[in-house]
Each structure stands twice: as C-alpha cells, then as structure tokens.
Length: 156
Length: 189
Image (cartoon, rainbow over all chains, first blue to last red):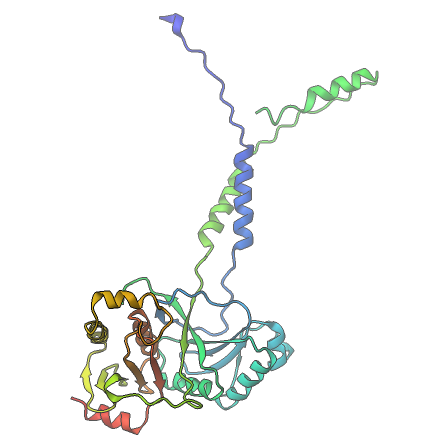
C-alpha cells in the first residue's frame, strides 16, 4: 500500500484579501462610529412606538431634566453662539428661564424658519413643567413638535 | 505566498545586463499575523461599540386652538384625565368621570375603536383604506381630550398619545388642567 502514499501539499494561504477586507471594515466602522456625546443634562427618555428617526439638523431642543430644570439647545453651533454667547458654542444646551422661553422660541423661528422643535423630557418627572411648555408652544404657534423617545419594541 | 516573495529575481537580472555589480537585495518577508490580529481586534471593538440606533422622534400635532375654535358634539368627545397617582379618569363628554387603573386604559381605547368599527361592514372598512387621507372616513371619529394632573408622570402623556396613534385615533388635544377637571376627578366613581 506504500504506492498510494499521499504527497503532502504545502498549503500557503494568501492572507492579502483577508487583510484588505478586514481593514476596509475597520475603516468603515471607525468612520461611522459616533461616540455618545457627553450629556450635559442627564435625562431618562420615555418609550414610544414611533418609528420616525430623530432629525439631525435645523433642530431646537427643549430639555426638561428630572429636577424640572429647563434648558434650550440648538444643533447648530452658530445658533448656540447667537443665543447664549461664544462660551456655549460647543455646548448642547443652556439653562433658560421659563418666562424667557416664548421670546427665545420666537427668535429662533425668526432666525431659521425651518427649525423643528423637540422636547426632551425625563420619563418620570412631573407633568406640570411639560404642560407649561405645551402651553407656551401653543401660544407661540408651534403646534407641530416632537418628543424624543426610545423605541419600544413590545406591543401596547 | 506568491505575493510576498517576488521581490528578488527580476531585479537581479536587470542589473546583470547593465554590467554593474548586482546589489544584494534583501528578501523581505513581513509576518502579517500581528497586523491582522490588531486589525481584527479593532474591527471587533468598533463593530461591538457602534450604535446604529438613535433615539426616535415622537411627533405630536396639536390643534391650533387660538385661531380656530372647533365645536364638537359631547357624545363624540372622550376626556381622559390622569390623576397625580396615575389613576385614569375616563368620561364621555366632560362630566361623570369613571375611575380606572392606568393599565386598563389600553383596553378601553381598543373597545372604543371596536365600537366605531362595528358601525360599518367589513367591506366599508376596507373601502376606507382607499382614501387614507380623508380624516372623516378613515379614522375613528372620537375626539380625545387629554388632561394630566401637574403631579402626574410626564411619560403618561407620551404613552397615551402613543396608544391613540397606534389605534389610529389621531384626533386629540392636550389641555392644561383646570378647576372643572379637578372637581370631576374628586367626585369620580
């Protein structure tokens, strides 16, 4: 049976394509990764079944944190600077008084007519503050707004 | 490893032709294993940490109550009030509220939708789908008034509106609590 002794084939695998693909994927993930920005205000989001994605530009956000403090923020650094000064250029939001909110909202709409209003409220805080904000929004004729939520995958 | 060791041969020949002293070329073989290791390590890290899911926007459109006043029949209107302890007070029209636990609200809303659907034959309901933008035919015609106590949790608002949207009952308004609401909630059964 020695006749059929198999000659061993020297297997050399060319790793180049593998490395190519690996680096391609690596580059893709490195470029697409957006690390969660350091939150200026800690807010636990409520849940909803809305599939709509959050708009990324032309946005102003009214934050209400768990202590019922009110903040206003813009995505555009230029808007932040125009409203709260150069120190807030790269911040997400700035603390505002409830009494000033209607004027700020009007001013923001004057500067950017396409701006959309988002409300970011903590799921467990009291409704009073949100109620006041809704009233202010209605008075300033912002009847279309969105609330930032996490997607709830369970049924109703 | 054909890709790595083609470096030597060709070059030597060329130099020999010109009669120059052939330069000794070092055969360079790079062990790619650590490189690949690191690449895959980083790849795994970025794949695992990437979050494609961002928070969602939950859109609410309120009726423009300041410029437009709409009169609604009381029988079509349902007031949902939420107390500070998250008890739901349900009433047809504005008065005579009924107390119910917050969890029971979904069933009540479903029952209202079923009540609307029972007025039509399945064929009629199907025909409504042909006019998805006609607010009078497609959606159940209940008008909801949502009133939350200032001490209630704000997520209740989002959850109630969410339920209404899912059940396709999109006519609702959110109003601040007033004295009538407080009285009704106090004397509710």
